[in-house]
Image (cartoon, rainbow over the protein chains, first blue to last red):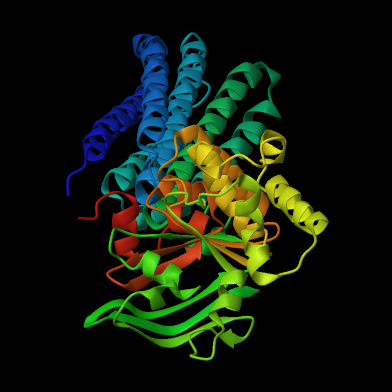
Length: 222
Length: 251
């Protein structure tokens, strides 16, 4: 039996997907601006933030409206509450991309500290995790969501690697590199945070599909 | 602790089997809601608990329903004692065409004859207080119960049950004729009453079941499909049929 709520949920789904596209685009462009020293691209990420904020509010309002009017239960309730949480995670991801774009603008004006090798690797991990988390949401794919959660340790490892290199090879040896090294350290931290948010999205997807709470319960993933 | 233990319960109306192998424990001093589409057997199950189905011709029951370790399905069950212990509130409030006072003490006059006027007054006051009607009605006790509003009548019917000190209150759609405000006040009353009584409510209103109950049972075509904590039934039901019903996909 097709319900009117199904039509409404389809609309909500489309809006959350749009948010996912915006967040992915923001990460991609912020990292590209850093790699290619592209000022315009960094500015574009900063300029797009407002529309992402507006979409976040619109999705939140839609979810609250659906809860108030339909008083959803079971899978409908889990879908809408998860949608609200994923919405917030995606908006946060876009905000972090903006932080990366701002650091990128700072670095573009300065000589290159070192060729970027591990940061692009970490950014690839972050982008894959966000893409897979959104895919898991779209396809209600618990297996894919589980992979995203497990991938987070790889991101942590890469972050530690980049962090150690920047501290030992630059900050500790030459204080003149501090400004640029700290900017790169922050970017590393931002990328790792994006991975954490992707992990949250994936954990929310598992709850949405299976009503199983894996957040803060790693043993539940096995 | 279970106030009512139901085991392998089957019930037939003539050839039609209305309850099929029901097994459940209804917890003491909790509110249990029974939900399900019309004709699923939830009211029939409720009426088993005080043997109201006995009034229907051709009814046949097998299995076991224990209240205080006594199988109430047994032929030896004293129905007057049982119905004193297990009271029932109906969809439409049904006060007797008597005064408010006489409605309340009616049960006492039947079950405990010879009580003094002072004792009966005490029962009337205590019962009206427990349904939060005393302050409203204390100066109108001799007025006809039929002059009350629907909500007051329903509260009065609950007070009439409480007057005979039951253990279990059965409520069959107790708010279906009430407006949202009156419904909300009866729900608040139910929350108060569960401190002292076991309550089982049959309701078509799923939001009401979700709001007011501690445990919920979902019935379909005479079977108890799922029974568990209310928050689990309404957020993560185990059975696809429960999921379909509570999300409005059933039918």
